[in-house]
Image 1 (cartoon, rainbow, N blue to C red):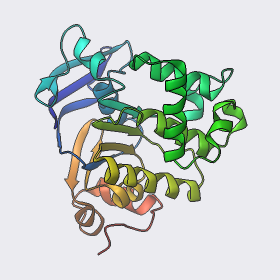
Image 2 (image 1 turned 30 degrees about the vertical axis):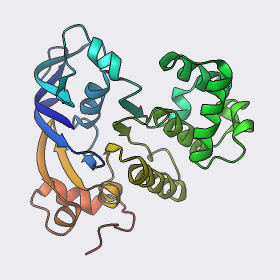
Image 3 (image 1 turned 135 degrees about the vertical axis):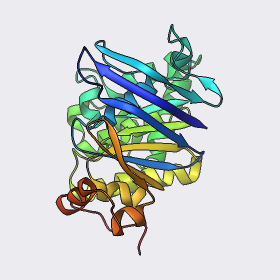
Image 4 (image 1 turned 90 degrees about the horizontal axis):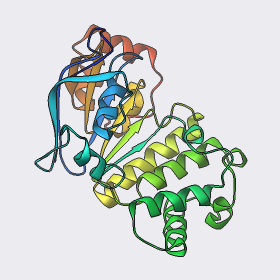
Length: 261
């Protein structure tokens, strides 16, 4: 479904932050990319979403979705897929929402940007998605400003917006790190449920190896732009090969493993 081959990315004239990265993800598969800040994990998913910063440069490699190369010269293919086939959830969705506009205004505009429909049709679609994300009273949410909602509610809104068009690939950049432990567990479970219901492929980027192990089918551990270890959660948790992976296991709190031994 999605294949990344020999991807190398740098910022400015510095050393590459992603070095010869390879990935293949199947329909409905969840892959966790784990590492500390600066490991290159967020840069990878931003390259898939076409959201790299202006000073970044893809030195080599390809990103292929359903046999179509996304890294064409003018970016048109990536633009065509963004939002519909490829969607992204950010670390703190409250910060990605416009603080002076109501949720409904932003959500309706987002839907109409990607879909030729009336404002009322967009409103109904938005409320339906908010309901699916188990947000209480979607109509009230639509007339609320971001600051009037909790962090967990804003995160659910971000997920609802990302899932509006049933994307093939959902990219999640530290989607639980700004939340309390209880809400973290709820968001993780909701992402798993979305995969189960819609067969969406998910790439989750996190510094928390426990979160990745709980929800992922495969885990990739990165350090300084390189992949240092890759495997299924049971192998990574019980038989880590890299000293860096062992350090992550020792230092990061874990949710109860879904892949129990």
